[in-house]
Image (cartoon, rainbow over all chains, first blue to last red; front, side, top):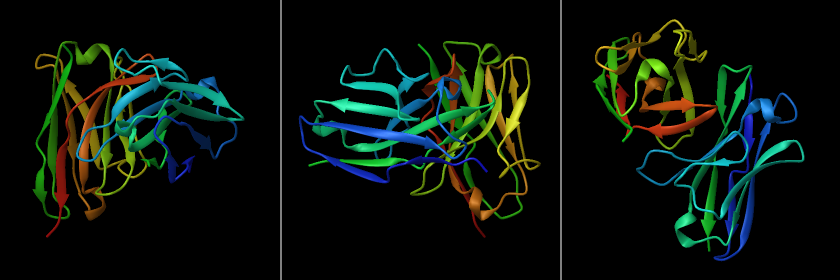
Length: 110
Length: 116
């Protein structure tokens, strides 16, 4: 069973920078995993932020960026705003068909 | 404008069946990859089923043999037929579009509760 791992929780100060990571039980995350990142606030549907490693949707704020870092997918928030407090999920593709979400990271802005 | 609207959720007894619908507008469901993603109360996201434009389907092991994904091109609607439901299937079910390795549009979700 493929497992995608994320930090359960992170805390960042307003205006600061934080990096969330997304690892795979199968080994290094690569471009063939096409990492996606989503933000979810309570009672809302997930909001897509990043697709295929680093591509932004038209609605994604500039302070969000995606990359591959040390064998993992990474989501970096620069200049964190209070409204960035939310749960963040990554998604990895396997073999082009299986899709596995990470367990999510609860980001606190404090 | 792309929009996805789910319906069909509700309370069902264990072993029962339910069919979820996802009405799409602003694009054609048969042209893109469509997904059903669920989220149990207080838990994370799980991709339960996918249908490709060519008709190929994928199911998570947790629902294989019990759930069936389909679409009606004339109604531009995606479906998820769920049978032999279990308590652990209780979740909010979202439909989502997948274009070029990216999930872009999601519906608002429909709640399925499996309980006696």
